[in-house]
Amino acid sequence: MQLVDPSFLSLLFSYRETLRASIARAIIESDATVSIVDCWVDELLANLGEATVKIAGGIVSKDSMSLVFGNLQKQSEENRIQAAAQLPRR
Image (cartoon, rainbow, N blue to C red; front, side, top):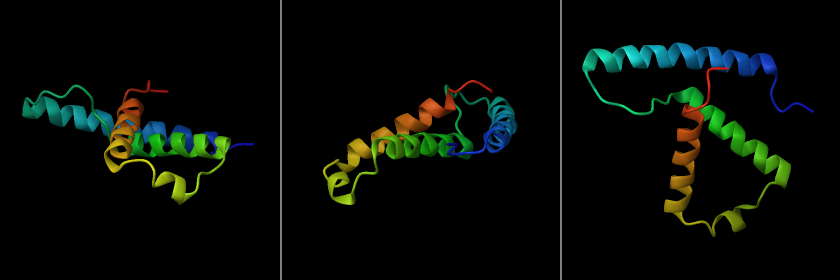
């Protein structure tokens, strides 16, 4: 069973490479210092990863999710996006 078509993932990684090159050029032109660059594709990949885990482990109800504090949930989201931003090119 496939959750996502491989050609869709290939297209996402292609968009990601194009966007990151554009962002890198903008950072160089502005003389800014940035250690990690992320874009909407990284956020989508992070969400796909989370969805995969939820599907594999059984989707958790909203009542059990309410036990997670807002700050911890936000930190987890930021960590997933940062991890996705560090994925290799392909």
